[in-house]
Amino acid sequence: MTIDGWYPRDHMPDDYPKNEEERRAAAIKYGMRLEDYKPYDKDDCYKYAGNYPDYGCVTYDHKDPYENWSDPHYRRNWGEGMDIQAIMHTSDRDSYTSIDDEETSI
Image 1 (tube, helix red, strand yellow):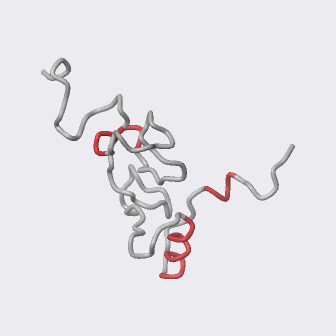
Image 2 (cartoon, rainbow, N blue to C red; image 1 turned 30 degrees about the vertical axis):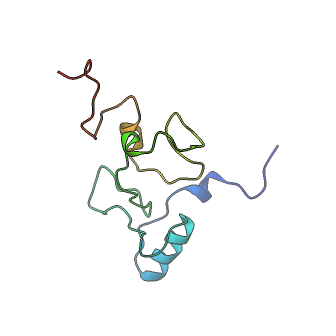
């Protein structure tokens, strides 16, 4: 069985945008406004991934716990962009709000 029109290669990051036209195409691909689109720095050897956008660090703790999330376990909505190191900012990882449970603090 095959699904015509859906290929993993279509969802992979392309090369870093070299001009304004490529930058505009990348912003459209990721569903962002051109002024909000900013790819990771090419010199950042830990995060660089072609034209993948830098969404910034929005951790699990910074998101509203009362929102009706598509995926409440990770507080994410369907189709929402993710930081490249999002796995480091889930509920079972470090807290960045400095509001920790008393039993887990030293």
